[in-house]
Image (cartoon, rainbow, N blue to C red; front, side):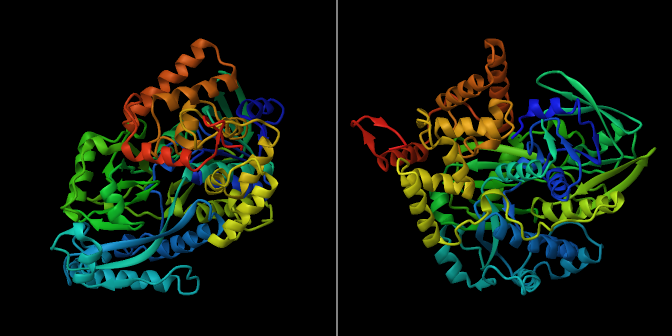
Length: 590
């Protein structure tokens, strides 16, 4: 598979494209994949890393959008529920069901307000009572009655709610449970989609910025080398999310389409909260009526989010005030729970690419997607507005169909039922997974069952490709983080468009967001990256300093702090579950 440098160099001889997609977030990636699979000559360029801005900062839910019903966005919810179910089918290695509980504090609240909001006569959120929630969940179930993959909702009394959720306090009147889904690594799913597009003939380049546009010709600059090249096209897809207006300014196309809002989340290491959730998500209202979430995430808890208007998407970060807001909201639903700021192991934020509308509250901005069409001379520009992570496939399909019509190219295949990456032939249940792992062990007897299980969860059935690559190599675990191996990291470096240490830490793996990053892990990973690229000492230092700055300023990660208790226990258990060679050396391939 071509790396970034090889792909960029190929533009010297292949520089005319049917379509150029600007923006390598999830919607741009979806359009790229759709077009490549139809045989379209397509190029995708991203100025930073793939899936590194808003697409790397979702709530990690794959959901229909229950709260959008009160805004009257029924078509969006139906589409999102359909796409949620497709992802459960097509990417089962990364997307899984998530049982969700809604605490309820009244019976009739929100009935009249909900009607006014639906009619557009009120835009501020209000508390939702059991009648409103029951109605919404009934619609949720009805929309999937012909495609029902998970159980229908249930309502629970105050007594049963308090028994299940003792930390909620006595104000809770009842609760409801229903199922949505969560995604363990949206960044890895994005990489698998890109790989499919490249395998079908497309070219995808990260760290490649459009610097100029003139008469159908785009000037591209690659960050690492500083090299530039011109490419031409008559179809441009502006998939730059919250940057759409800025990109259209460069293209001399109409702008003022966007009204971005910032959403921040935190990851908390609190075992009492993990135990209380017991695999469930809490979907709750804060004092302002804004919906918040928290659910277990790799042994910790993800909590969010905020919804704040921003004008400059480049400068956003999770602020101390937002952290206070999130923790205060949590205190409202679990008043008996104590969380200290020292238990926050990671924080992240992104800017939702929402349309510009006239409303006084961010919650009323539509979450549906749309295409804005403009022409600059002979070049058609398609600006992608809005869109939820869950609906990326449908949005990409819609854009691709319009481009196919303009190009007079027939669609070759549908992606509705197409497995994504390691989701192909993924074992359907625990017994099938166990059988699959035993068969893998027969083929690779020097790999432990634990390691094979970790890789199956991490890469799905694409773990077989990793195993084939490592078959003739003497692999060793990372000294600082033994649930990853040296060969595994080198495989990522060779095949997944990595250019920096941050790419590995933040997006090709979940090391940082899982709270596993400390100075020892950082040093070992950055050394592997530097060795792979044969960097000079100056290049190595620049990469490390940039990574440390981003980790601290944007994610609150302090590298020299010790492991949390839960992380230390987890690593001890991993080592105890594996064999020791000669009583001292811990290896995965024995």
